Length: 309
Image 1 (cartoon, one colour):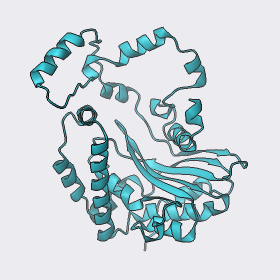
Image 2 (cartoon, one colour; image 1 turned 90 degrees about the horizontal axis):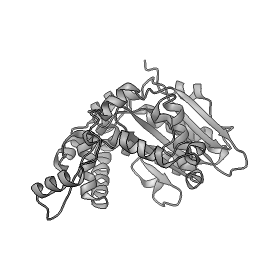
Image 3 (cartoon, helix red, strand yellow; image 1 turned 45 degrees about the vertical axis):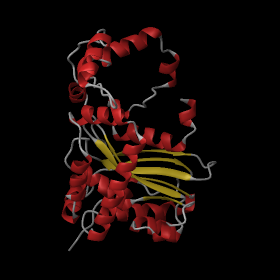
Image 4 (cartoon, helix red, strand yellow; image 1 turned 60 degrees about the horizontal axis):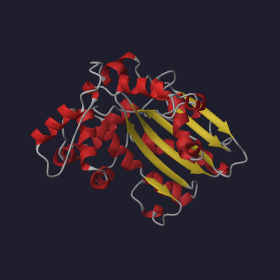
């Protein structure tokens, strides 16, 4: 926990979840509080495992030179002490849903050299049909840091605005999906005197997805997303990848099907999804450091829409 607290990005996203999903399990830090960690006992761990590591909520996958029948027999032999509690993850989520709350948390610390903040909208769940469109939108916004020499020449208009005007040290768009909800937004690091211009650039780029989208930007983002997904699959364990998809979707999703879903996203889809998740919707903000120049919450909220005549 001490190590995580030294990572500014992790701290911002912990606070972002805490303010976005107040009074829900998703708003609590993964590691828990320092008091709970210090008071944890063997009985706590045993009770947690018996409650949550149950047979109906488990997926077992294997790859390589294995036979399905052999794996089934091994499972029947080795996994005999698991709890048979029929409660599913979906039932637990429906009991305490992760309700999004438009809100903010600000931790002012003028001794830090750089300001860090994240602005996010309520996103899509893993199985939501619009989750792929949000992933394409994430690639349209892009990511960048000042150590990269290609910022002024990247396809993302937001990255170009930031790099040309030198108003940030780094920025990263994100689209995080959970069981019943998600978060979509931008995380950025900048000098204190750049926050006003940076906030304007970010909100302009995000809100523009609702009304002006170019075919070229969509195609670029689709290709970048495909490349990123392939790279992620190559770097991760195949068995882990299969297990993840079985838990989330109940089946293995072939790359061809995933690519077909990405290719089905066009400009009209982007506008529709942006109007669902972004246009005139509440935002959640988490900020830390010398952030006195960061616009207030109402400023961000007013820039989620544009009056068009």
